[in-house]
Every structure is written in structure tokens, then in C-alpha cells.
Image (cartoon, rainbow, N blue to C red; front, top):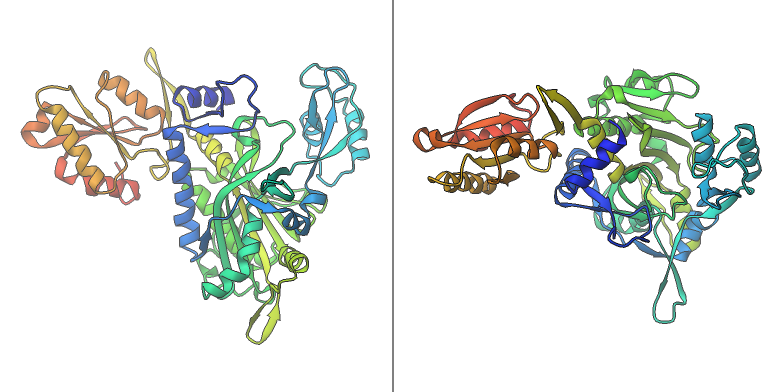
Length: 494
């Protein structure tokens, strides 16, 4: 759905909006989430936690967002966390060079290209400035995206806002391995924030400066990469893989491992679990792909990289970076900190390797809205609704009294409180016509609505309405908690 439609809905219903927007000079790339938007966002995190972190018996942490300079010296960020920038000589606007070239060439520009190579591509593709349409640019330069902060009264302790959540996990690994009494493979997860001084934030939540991430780092013995006890559960599950120079095709995990498309079963297993998670988010498999990155595209520390991408109105958007980081991170922090980070299992001492699933929360949120957005004509009227899965909708059900008098308001409140006591996310609204109330909850993706009418007082039944089909049926009030639980859990169809 066009991004203007999503932006309009987001602002109209306060799902998300630019931060500090009452001030005209507030920096771009920062967003606030309103009540319903934050609920959807939180449920995305909770579903990730249920479907991946808890099912795979991982441990979850919450790390500091500010870390000392030595951490980023070890990780390579101070030296390598750079984006190429280019300035228009006519209007002086700054742009990220590789993305500017991609916009004009319709191709992918490898991150490893030198500034000189980018200068040549700008001339080759006759790149124009998006702001003034000028075609004269200064030479491309490298810009470090780290956000520096001063700590302490004297400001002599150089620190940075973390540019990715994973560094905290690497720093905590040794402690968690010992204190949580875990064996490898060990998955450590985190939901949190990272910060990148983006040159030109754009496309709403797709390119921000304050980034929400849900991340998993799986630590394992590289000699046991094919020892995955639960692999049988996914071996016949098809993955949408886009191999180098080829079209996307479905291939089973078993065949992908057999053909050595992955480094081992462990990589195939977690990629399968990730695809299943995004199915639960309501993303059609036909809109997904894991795109293999070649040596010029992937990060310097990665032995193998698959970008999980989803097709939207904005094109293919990367939602998750799947990196086989080898032992680069632990080795680097061991060297810089002078602390031993090796482990000993079965008489063998080694530094664990890491496979990473680093997902963007806000990008996932945006894509879920994009693919759930529906607009249709119903006679002379236009209907807008979000076809969100029940598990990430802001509420499972809304409760409406037909009118506020004759005891209907009190009965509706009684039902609201009863459903609330069962842990069901329920919304109450008594204002406006029933039609307008349906329209309001449809717009934010609430799957079901209950209307309490005069018959409810007589026969103890209510009207239950389903969002997508708008079908209605009478249901006994006493049956509502169990029925709604079954509907949310896909144990029953409406």
C-alpha cells in the first residue's frame, strides 16, 4: 500500500509520529509511538519472545545503551562503521552516496566500494540531486555514524551510544555462560535500542537514527555446527532463498544443507525458525526471501550473510540480518580487554562461533502495517482496516453497548471486566454510532467486536463481529472467554 496511506493512518490514529514535532527544528529520524502503536510494537516483541526466545530455550538480557570507547575499538566500529556521503554543489544538501546511486541505477551498490569507485558510478549513471535536480557533486567522503556522549563531570570518559545491540551480548557472554549453567549452543537474546547518526533518514520507520532491535546471538562449537537435535522439526520446511545471481526459489532445509548452501545445519535451523516467526507476524511467504550476500556486500566480520527481506510498496526491505560472525567478536574483545573468553567443553578449549539474527522492530512494525492495510468500497462508502493477526493486534476484541441507557452500558462494562480478568486484551467504546465504532477499531486492526443490545439482557447473548468478513453471530456471554481464546490461538475459525 502507498506509504502516504500508511503515514496518514499512522498520524490520524497516533500509531507513530515524528518525535518532538511541536518544535520546527527537531531532527529527523526519531519517532514516538502512540498508545495503539506501542501496543502493536510490544506485541511484536512478545511474539518474537514466545516463538523464538522461549521455544528455543534462550536467555534474554537487557543491556546498557552507552558503552565505553574501548568496546568499539575492539569491535571495529571506530574504524569501519562509516557511510559514504556526498554533497550537492548546487543546494549543499547531503546524501548517502550508495543509496543515491541505487535510486538512479535500480541496482545494488556493494558497501565495500571505495569512495573513488562511488564517484565514478555517480558520473556513469548521471545521478541527480533529489532536492534540486542538480548533477554536480563534491567527491564522496566517509562519515562515521557513531553517536558520541561525554560521561562524568569532566567529560573525560569517552563513550558512545551503541550502534547495534549485539555488542552488549558479546560482552556478557562469558558471565552468562558460567552463571546460567548453560551448554553450547547458547542463544542470548535482547530487545532494545541502538543509535546511528544516519545521513539522510527517510521512508518513515525504515531508516531511523534511534532504532529498535530484537536480536539473537547463538554461540556454538564450530566443530558441532551439524549437531542440531531439533533439526528434524524443520528439515522438510521450505525456505525462500535467493542465491547469488539467481531468482528466489523454495528449497527444504534438508536439501539446502545437502547442497552446502549453508555453513551447516545450525544456520539452516535458525533461518527456518526466523521465517516461521515472520509467518506468525502475518507476512505471506510469497513476499519473503533470504537474499545471499556476496563478498563485496557482507560485513567484514561475516563468513556468511543472508538478508531477510520482505516485498512492500517501497520495494524489497531488509528486516533481519542473518550473519555467521565466526569467532571475530569474542576474539576481538578478548584481545582488547585482556579477559579470557574461551570456553572448555568435552576436554576442548575454544572460542565459540556466533550466528546472528538481528531484526529491526520498527521496520517489522512498518512492514506488518503495510501488508495488513486494506481499503475497499462498500457501496458508496470506503472502508479501511488493518488485517493484522490476532496475536499482534492492539486488542483482541472491542466491547460496545448499543446505547448508554437502560442498563446496556453497565452490562457491557460487566462483560469488559470479565474478559479483562481472563487476561484478554479488550477495548471499550460507548461513543458514536455502532457503525463508526466498528470503523474505528477496524482501522487499528482489532479482530473482533462485541455489541451488547436489549436482547443481551433477556437471553444473555451478544453479537460477535469478525473484522475481515464483517460477519456476525450471536454468542452466549458465558462462552466468550473460551471462544475468544480459541480464536486468538487459531484453535477455532469464526
